[in-house]
Length: 139
Image (cartoon, rainbow, N blue to C red; front, side, top):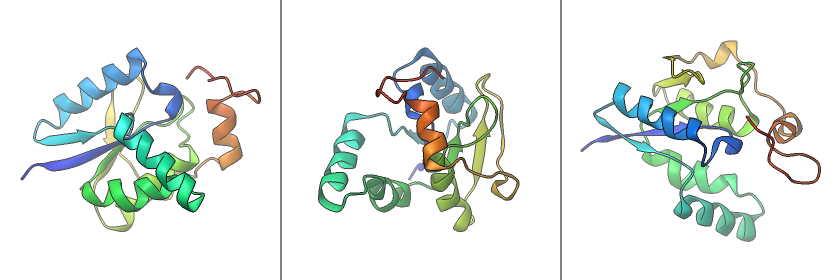
């Protein structure tokens, strides 16, 4: 059975050429793994289902998606800081002793040491993803 590798990345990357390039890079680097990309309709629907029923959409990932993966690759913002949700996803794997890596926008993949990385706050993360009027901020 093939292992699943979660690709945690800011939502302002979803649907971009950069996302496509990084997914291709991850697939080349980890040819024996299936890549779990949260930017899929099924995951958007799962997030909304949990948000509507519990008020916390991220529980969908924490309870339904991440437990089915055996490691993760995570994209920080350009200043190498991880968003609150992406950091929490990486911590999920680190807490279980599962492998985690960081992928830079140029496709460089290195082991991720969460003890040397502090997450952005939820507010800081949101400000890097959307404007106050809800428009997506370019990565």
